[in-house]
Length: 247
Image: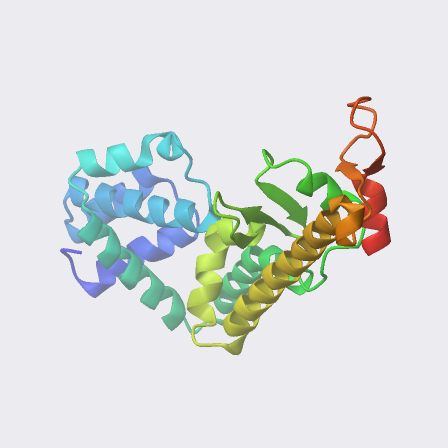
């Protein structure tokens, strides 16, 4: 920012209080002799920072905010500088009213993601869903609480949490940098994938043994997702029946 601390403080106070851009520009020019374009660039930068934090930026770039920002000389470096200065300024405010308002707003933004983290601990229920997923290789992902398990073409399994797609997840990582919670989440995801892999392997082993010829110690039966789909296959067992036996 190309002006003194008093002008900067006045701009931030007016922006925090919701004053319109034209009023901020008018005051900064009239009282501090600031340049119109410089003031507008700073205000638009703050708009971008707030939109990013709230997750309001979409494919249309929040109504052209970024396009306007670049048109008036904004750069990524400038945006980073304003983000750093704005963040430091908001933290430095001594008024309890301001602090409470900012902290409450921040908590409100992060609370849904924190609640999601609290509910991810449950493993999938033992039901027919696994048999359905096993019989539908074209379906890459299987839903779990607050996320999904996805398989790749090589059979590898990856656990994805819906919360990780939110911008607030990045803020949690910043606030809780180095916290044991991230190791715990990664360990849980690995355990979830290993549990699913073990269940799939067991199901496949049972299917193989059911279909193994009688003379080789198997049942000599065909396992099908739907035993009605092929009337010529001879004696067969439903995949769901096999799954319930193994479950």
